[in-house]
Image (tube, rainbow over all chains, first blue to last red):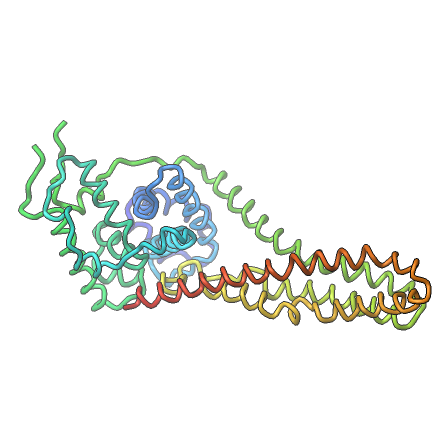
Length: 188
Length: 199
């Protein structure tokens, strides 16, 4: 079941016709994998990640009681998930104090630059490491970008202007190019 | 095993990462969410119930006391209990943020919650009614204490109260100071964090 179906359905329902349970269930079916990846962007430890994912689902279920259709289901799901995950990071002062912006990473000389990962796992680990160094807002933008969203969708989720998003995405692309190389190399 | 994804395409790597299936049923989610909500409410209600209990207890003593001054003192203690319950409701009851708020809003919200806690601690004499509490206590204890000046043996009856009060003061103020310092530190850190996130 695609996100378009959900958005269309949310558009057509009248308040209270579709229950909180069914909205949650459909959102979980459509965005379950994305939420799983989002949790990975915020928590490295597998045990803590499971707790975070559970927390996201709990909040999501609760939130559908107040879903007013002023935004798409996808935007709603991502906003809630990012908020829960941001809260999770913000409560960890030790981690919070070490987070940097995408601009800082862009200007940082790093040994990782330009070296291609040899396996998908290594590449994923490297990507996760990069994401988890970022501050919540930048993290939200990079995760949305990696999920394949366009600037206007990212703007809806983050509340930033399209110009701001475009600039951030440009920087993210620069950083990713440096961290992952370019030229379309494939693993043998 | 050869990978099917280009190692330099982060979007592909990200979207095709191995999945860790989420195994909670809708019933479990619903149950857990309700349980958590109950827990949060219970924690806030405990403070309110404590204040009300103090209020009722002293109101009961107030109804039975004969002497005017202790009676006024006990009445003040009863009102202080009521004030504790009200202030706990007003300041400790968790606020609610729109669930779909954007990140900058949620950071502000988190900071404002910390500021609320700090303000409560900072003005605890007024907000928790400690001034009324001590005034009431003085009105209850002092007449008896003055009477016992003629018979020092009677003064021994007040020793437990005074010792307990001393211990409470010795523990309460350093703890409050430490807590306020930690809260302020966290608020300052969050302010810097918000400023940097916006830039």
